[in-house]
Image 1: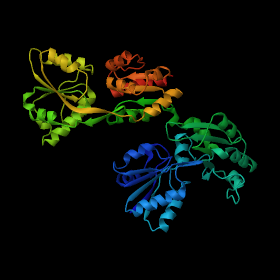
Image 2: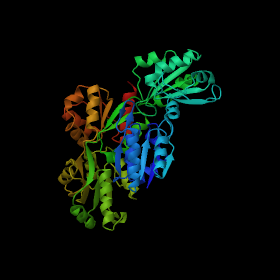
Image 3: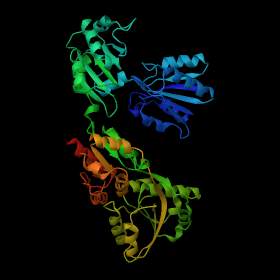
Image 4: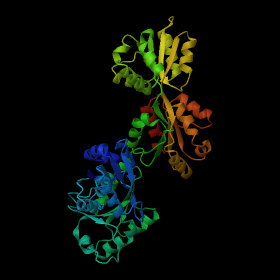
Length: 503
């Protein structure tokens, strides 16, 4: 048994430490709070018990004593417990109290530090907390203390005279008192001060003012917790060093409708460009209940002249069955291999197979034309391993051209409801910037869950990866605002970035 007190970092999931990620992957139980990015839950074991104990000001899902009891109980069941806490467990995170409770019950524990929000949020807002030409010390202060708290240990005079950068954590409710106390203690009224809301996340907002005007400005612009308050000369560097909020898609909310198994590249790239990405996959990719037909086709590969792969998933599941049957890429020796686009060709390359043909336009119609030209006057036998439900353009076009076409289902798509409620909420608020569609099936599955009228009543832009997907949008009565010239994920990202950053 053991409890790990893990720092989840300030919000950006990429700021989690390698050690914390390793522990999350091994733990039997994951206990997490409100400030831990929920994307980190994906790092846990599939069979791990996941328990939410979120606490925000004035609203405790589970009181602290109960959290302590929970950690002790789970550990004494012989389990490895990962207690995931926002920021660093020991910096205003009550991790010290949890550690003391564990020691009292003779439960072994480790504390794994996390990047704390005072440091990270300020850095993402372009505010270095120390600077050789300005300040050589930092003071991190709780913002929870009430002005009339008996026995307060906050020395406002010392803060005002220290010359340090002052950082107040979770102090929005007390901002007027913080400002008043610092001014009363002698801090100059024109001292630069800043607020940073949800630092290091796509929802980050910054406000720069002076310590005397900050409370009024904060109220006017609707700043709330979780925000940090930074006071000191280094705040003046915000306008020059504010790299994060200068990203091309910062402040843009973009929906990715692609199946989660395929969406990682698109999500990662959009996030890197600063977007607030909402995953609404509508479907997920799953293996077939029975692989009998696919296995039979693989065992009979000798009869086929060519194999056509129409998706990366087709490659993935084909190779899984190839391996399960004791075969590898050598089984495709001498076969003509075609891929519908560069993504699929890349997946083949990862398996040691170079595609003999990738059409100029990455759609089924272009692939039919290219294959007919390549095999003019011949009647080859073609194997097409693909999704159970897919467009018939490719097999129908090849069959009409005299090819012996054998279509074998390789995987299927299954309904996925995740993300729908959040998309509906954002459409109601009209706060979505763009919805991306990487195939016709993503359009139809999305509209099976999201009423078309909700989309049309908002100002959201709709982006399609290519002409077929765009035509599906238009067939459904929706406009296509963004469409790249090249039908790839990279080109789609570029087109979305260009369209949204120009607004």
